[in-house]
Image 1 (cartoon, rainbow, N blue to C red):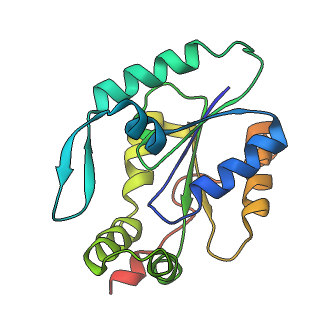
Image 2 (cartoon, rainbow, N blue to C red):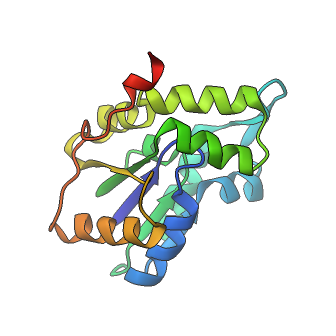
Length: 179
C-alpha cells in the first residue's frame, strides 16, 4: 500500500511518519531528503528560500524507488509537502494544524516571517487538501494535529489504513483565521 503523507510545513509530517514506520513496519520515502540527495531541483527561490523542485524528475525517482522495494507486502510511506502531487497512491493523509499553532512551530524552527506568513495562509485556505483531492478524490483524509500528540496522529492514520475510521476532506476548516 502506498500512503502519501502531506501538509503545510510544520504540521508534523516527518515526526508522524517516523512513528508510523515503526508501528506498521513500513518503508519511508522522504521527499525533502530525496530532492537533496539526487539534486532534483532546478534552482533556489532566493526570496522565499525554497528549492525549485523538478517535479517530473522527483516523481520518476519516486516511482523507481517504490518499484524497487523488495517486500511488496510492506507499506510505503511517501512523506513531504509535495507528496500529494504524486499520482500513485492508495491513501493520502493531509496533516493540518491551526495557523496559530503552526506559527509557533515555525518560529521555534527559526523560519523567517515572510515564509511563516506564506505557509500560514496556505494552511488557512487548505491548499494541500484541495490539491490532493483534485488528484486523489476520496482517497484523501485530513487530520488536525493541533491538539494531539504525534503518536496519537499515527494511531489515527493506522485506523484509516485499516478502514476503521475516515477523516474526509472538509472536516478541518481554518478559513475563519483569515478574517
